[in-house]
Image 1 (cartoon, rainbow, N blue to C red):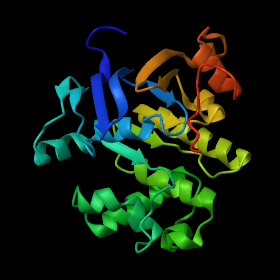
Image 2: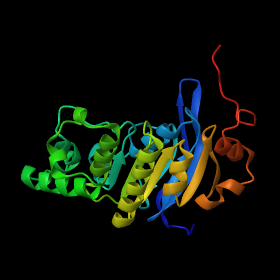
Image 3: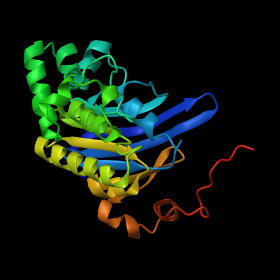
Amino acid sequence: MREGAAKIRVRGLSKSFGPKVVLAGLDLDVAVGESVVVIGGSGTGKSVMLKCILGLLEPEAGSVQIDGEEVLGLPAAERERVNRKIGMLFQGSALFDSLKVWENVAFSLLQVSRMDRSAGKARALDTLARVGLGPEVGELWPAELSGGMQKRVALARAIASDPEIIFFDEPTTGLDPIMADVINEMIVKSVRTLGATTLSITHDLASARKIADRIAMLHQGRIIWSGPAREIDRSDNPYVDQFIHGRAEGPIKMEVRR
């Protein structure tokens, strides 16, 4: 990667919870317009990494730059300005049960950008159409939706403001393989249309292969391998090899409580 070409640059990111070290000097770059997927087992710190980049958690050490600007330690108002560039698809969709579908999709437009409700609704319905959902869905409540439809709505919410950066947190969790592939296809199409930079975390290898330009593996708080998605099967890294083939035997030792 060319010096200065990163949309997101993370250096030396460290985060602990008591004696538990989760991130141990993590380094990661995401280039402008690039789709990077971070893989790793459950509990390896993928979500913690995202939360630190977003400013939801405060790391003990490190640097996070977005468009060359250091964002760690920014005052709340300045951090909000930076976060307006970002869309987020949360694990489990995280829709607001008390809001109709269109209000979920338009939430940031209404609450942050202060868009008029009629304009916000029009944008929401247009965005729902982009993920294959008709205007009638906008009047439903999240509890009336299937898991796959909830995920589509969550994707619509993530792209409604045409963000420069999108984070995807386990985008296919809880979906059957066919619906997971539908969501992956929609993610790829949406990202290409927007020209957005994306950072995703998952343990779903099928999803990673589908949506990533580059895959990075997180283990013991650091990125231990990074390369083009097409090269993951010949990484020559024993940790990556064990993970992608789902082998119990190998250098990765799962903690088991007795």
